[in-house]
Image (cartoon, each protein chain N blue to C red):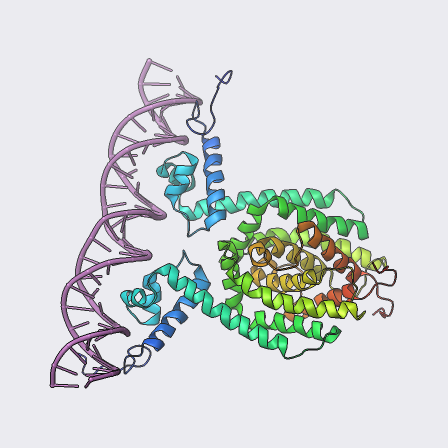
Length: 214
Length: 214
DNA sequence: GCGCTTATTGACCGGCCGGCCAGTTCATTG
DNA sequence: CAATGAACTGGCCGGCCGGTCAATAAGCGC
């Protein structure tokens, strides 16, 4: 039955496939929620975009809020998995690792603008679930920095969690607030900003000559 | 029927006062929009909270969108004035000025969480008006940094706009995404984070020993 | 005092909202 | 081959949405 299915594309799958239907609904919900936020999207829109009846969405997800939760959970679990693998593939703790982590995180956000927006909506909701998910990644990164501090690679008088927090927030807000600073005179593009931020960040972390160890 | 109205306090001003009415509507709209966003608020709620009829809001502002625009404009003009006076009161260009600017901006956000949320909603809308308003302030700050660079106080190989951008974004996101990182293990409170960020930031700006002038 | 303007009201509108339900189609399975 | 249950549909519901309108009441210049 799957031999020459020429156009199973947008609508009307050749055969019933609840998993695929669920996925199509989630995809449409993701796009629309990310674009307009929970309150700004109508179930009818999601139904229309996913090529499915409104009733069917309720059948699969129960309610609009449950669909929103499912949307966030799918997106965030993908995000967490992507970040975790990236973080764990290099177990060494040095300056280059941190620099590359910043670059990787920055590029992830650059390539996943919808995840950035989803974070922003979630923050405004006060939903802490995405933060809990990040806690593990941050703890991992902070531990690497702590090791580098003890090895004398980075200055010791800064909370490693705040090091991670600083670069995560600077990168995230660069993309979240793009419309805010896009027109500022003299501002550079993504790569130029990343370069300058890395200069500031890495130099700020270097052990200071006059710093007295606690 | 209106003989013994015992409580004229919150509502029912003794006499008609359209300016005060406008203000009450704007206050209620600000609180609600900031809390739930444009799409999440019903005109009926604003009417109820401000002690005014829904029709009266339309009389004064025309439409929900116009009220939203008026709300943003009022809040942002207050923000801009507050920041401008703070920035212009100290014309010198040195390390202490930048440090104090960061502290002032950080504390402004800390004391005005509703402005922070309004920025976030506005960014998600893609509305660039608040960014245009900030452009003037940023240009002013960047010029100060450029002067300090030429005086040899800061390293010269970083775009001054990116210096401002970095601290603005780190501070803003600290408050915007509080629900995200509030539960991270080992993270400090507002003042501890500000201290650590300033250490990183100021040390990162110091002229590097081995930097060759362009 | 008398109008004129305008602030203010409450009732009302068409339309859209999320959700529900009775019914139909389909795949599985015993 | 039933028949059972899940996938799926169209239509409907009560209620809320933003907005309008005619009518009233209060300030204000004359």
